[in-house]
Image 1 (spheres, rainbow, N blue to C red):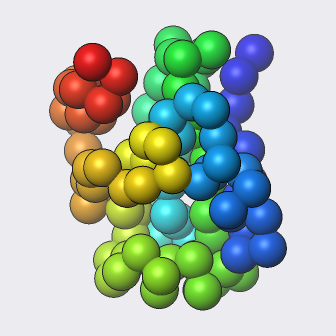
Image 2 (cartoon, rainbow, N blue to C red; image 1 turned 90 degrees about the horizontal axis):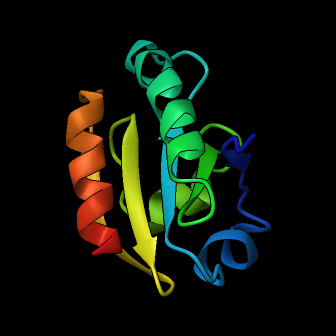
Image 3 (cartoon, one colour; image 1 turned 60 degrees about the vertical axis):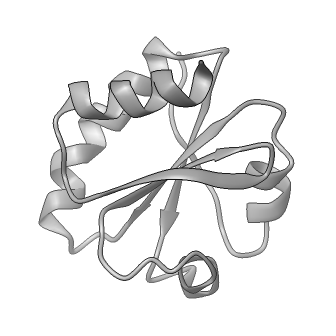
Length: 108
């Protein structure tokens, strides 16, 4: 069963930027209510897209450098990476269908 993996400032390049598959990165924090609302959706999508896309979670409190490097100003922010580059982003808790459209577009 696929689950989002934790990524940190130390391993972000290795885990996300060098991934052979596109990666959806969920920038979140423990105290963030909307982050907790979207987390189960991200978990579901990680199972649905297992093998074609990877899913990572970056705790912005523990990993501020990565969040700053990608201009994350509010959370949750979800960034889609393909070929080591951010290609799309979603800010805020959005419905599952909206995220699926972004993912399908990135995979297309």
